[in-house]
Image (tube, rainbow, N blue to C red; front, top):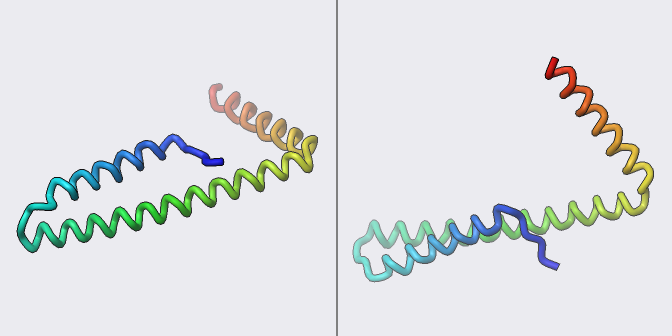
Amino acid sequence: MKHHTQTQPETEHLIDDAKALLSATSDAAGEKVKEARERLTAAIDKAREAWGVVQEKTVAGAKVTDKAIRENPYKSMGIALGVGALIGYLLARRSK
């Protein structure tokens, strides 16, 4: 099961744009262009790696949360109710 976050399409578009830039400059000569292309390629690789780590951690966190809620449904509902009541109280005080 693959989970998507709202920023994933933005990240994919950024990577696609960077790849397009690399392709567009593939015929360009010059040491500075070559160095810039190498740095961009390295940055794309690092970004993909970091994105993969973020996705793995997000999925792992969601699984742990899901397991905790399933094992302790009433306790989870109580905590959620308490947090909601606290937020409501703080917002009510703030609006006065």
